[in-house]
Structures are given as structure tokens and as C-alpha cells.
Length: 235
Ligand SMILES: Nc1nc2c(ncn2[C@@H]2O[C@H](COP(=O)(O)OP(=O)(O)OP(=O)(O)O)[C@@H](O)[C@H]2O)c(=O)[nH]1
Ligand SMILES: [Mg+2]
Image (cartoon, rainbow, N blue to C red; front, side, top):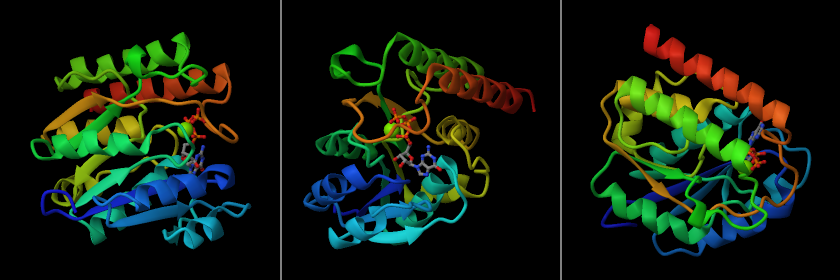
């Protein structure tokens, strides 16, 4: 519970065996967190079993994709709690940063993390100039085209939304792939949700990187995100 509101943490997980134990147990240990939900996206390793052993509720999502997994996590979390936190169980995010998101939940519908503040990027974290300025640039594109609050990252999974606000955008979410994060920001803007973006720590990834593994994959994803943002603005 946080300020009288229940809190569920949802984690999209695809083969996160090296990280899932730490991720689940560290969030479950917080007084503010009522439930940890792991969305098992067809993992072929022990992700689901380890999550369950450490106290998480495990829900399977058969449709493969980051967006499908995140949406399922938010669906489940907002069905069970008043505040839903989305976070990757890959060692990149810091558990205690959830407190920063919760504080802003008193004032905003959607609290987004940003990973591009240099003070919060750890040595060896995968946020070199290419990813950092790419994320920043796309965030600015959304900010300008949709006249949003100050945005400096378009791909940070760590975020919080209250259940009533999620209900307003839930049926408009359609992206199942890796450009779900900007879609959620755009839908929030289209539905006039009050949002804020705040710096969170970004640590080195543990285990196998799956989306932005190489520059070409990251560049292609950037193009898909750009096209998505422009198309939403023009339509
Ligand atoms: N890539 C990918 N990730 C998924 C999928 N389903 C769930 N996930 C989870 O979504 C999160 C994002 O994937 P990551 O591999 O961390 O990709 P990223 O955050 O862009 O980049 P890195 O953290 O640097 O690897 C992780 O927690 C994955 O376990 C899926 O189908 N594809
Ligand atoms: Mg990651």
C-alpha cells in the first residue's frame, strides 16, 4: 500500500532466469508493494518456476512480444491493485526507485521513468550516445507533436499508472512489439492523462539483451518508433 492505495508490480519476462529471483524478491520485500506479477512470455528456461518460488504471481502470455507482455502485465496489475508499476526484471532498474514513481503518483496519472540523465547512468550500462540521444530525440518528437510535458526518453519500461487512468487507454493499446513504450505515452497524451517523466537509475544489463542488442536492431526500432509517432500525429 502507498498512501492508502494498493500497489502491484508487473514484470514482462522472456528468459530472465539469471535476474528473476533478485527482481521478484527485492520488490516483494517492499512494504509498499502488495503483489508482484511476472508475465512469462514463453520462456524456455526456469524464469516462471523461479518467479513462483520467490512469491510472484506468474501469468503466461502466449503472444510473443515486449508489447504483449507489458500490456498483459498492466491488465493484470490494474485488475488487482489501484496502482500498477511496470519494470523489467533484467537488472537494469533499481528497486528503490519505485519510491520516486510513487511520490509523483499523488499528482499524476502516469509517472514515466527516464534513463537519459547522465548522473543516473551507471558505468557499463547500455546507454551509449547512440541509444541515449536516439531515445531523447524520439521523446522530443512526441513532446513537440503532442504538446506533452517534458520528455527525455521514449523507451523506459519503468513506469507507474493508476488503474482508472489505465482503463481509459487500455482498449486503444495495439502494439505487441518493441515500440509499445512510445505507444503508451502517445495514448496517454491522446486521452489527456496527466504525466510526468523523472530520472531513474540505469544499471548494466545482466543476462542476454534481447531488443537493443546491436546498433542495427536499435536503429530499425528507432525507425519503427518514428513512423508510429508521425502516423499517430497525422491520423
Ligand atoms: N525482447 C523481448 N523482450 C521481452 C519479450 N517478452 C518479454 N520481454 C521482456 O521485456 C523486457 C525488455 O527486453 P530487453 O531484452 O531487456 O530489451 P531492452 O530493455 O530494450 O534492452 P536491454 O535491456 O539493453 O537488453 C525484458 O524484461 C524481457 O524479458 C519478447 O518477446 N521480446
Ligand atoms: Mg532491458
